[in-house]
Length: 111
Length: 114
Image (tube, chains in turn green, orange):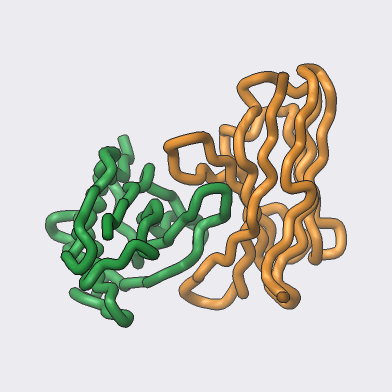
């Protein structure tokens, strides 16, 4: 069966440290993968997109890697800040430009 | 703000009642998506439109659910004979419909069925 797995346990991290989140998938061959941020009671907000032929993408303090052999993406928040506290969702492009989401990982950055 | 808007933001209803939600996408976005999200889970795809055509429906979308996008602009999602299991956040997203897609989400409608 097709699965997208993110660590369901919350990630508690000290301000200034790097948070690393994992997204693993099985039985998919996505052309691209996206990461979204979601705050409580709000809709997801797009952060980064990485294509299957790209190894790494950066945007400000965010970095995403994509390993199609391992079927894994890593999402890094460097120099984390309390304002980075949120749930982070990975999403795979599946047939027909549809996005299939993982369950999300909650990040809590402590000052 | 010209982002995606959804109304109402919250809806409480009794089991067996019908409810209708509205989504106004970003203007000129061709694609419109509906998702359902329950607590602690990621959004689950329900259906999507390319302009006014409904192109795909998830098996999650039972016969009690119907969605429309009559003029290729706003969309409505109706749930008939609501059940307690329908309680969730209903999210709408839109995209430009060209090439690699970024989806822009609305704030969602939170439904509670008593």
